[in-house]
Length: 151
Ligand code: 4BW
Image 1 (cartoon, helix red, strand yellow):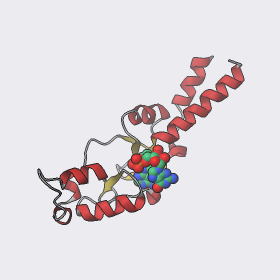
Image 2 (cartoon, rainbow, N blue to C red):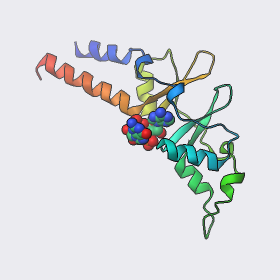
Image 3 (cartoon, helix red, strand yellow):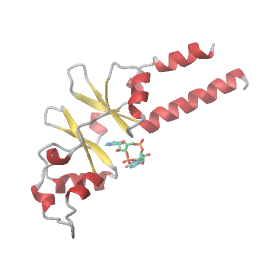
Image 4 (cartoon, protein in one colour):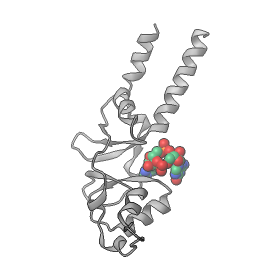
């Protein structure tokens, strides 16, 4: 019984968990680090996707990567913020799924990433799914199971 129901949660669509592209803070590969840092600070997020003008996903940029790239041996080199581009330092090892993928895939991708990027059938960026949304859903599901099965 339990295994059948656990299977069904894993097979669910991921559509309802997606934060759509319009609500996702992002920067472009050719933006300089100063612009990216401003977007990161103003949005309040630690890391955000890097998208080109055709909404193709190129990577992820974080505050930590930016700060690391302007740290010299002896001191901080803030002038690099203007000259260096996002594409030079972004992480390209991105957790991604297709919007037609199932819950199981998004959950497993999120184990090592705070958010998973979602792409369309044609490879365009569609949005993100945060690990917190997936965990909140699993938590609610398991509590519901406990209530229904009296354990
Ligand atoms: O601005 C914020 N608004 C809200 N409502 N919550 C925030 C905000 N900034 C941080 N938080 C909270 C969230 O619970 O802190 C967590 C960690 O943020 P992070 O990683 O380190 O910036 C947030 O957890 P989350 O919602 O599960 O988000 C996980 C990660 O997904 C974030 C960020 O890297 C990315 N992210 C989430 N929403 C985003 C986004 N990136 C771009 N645009 C968005 N709208």
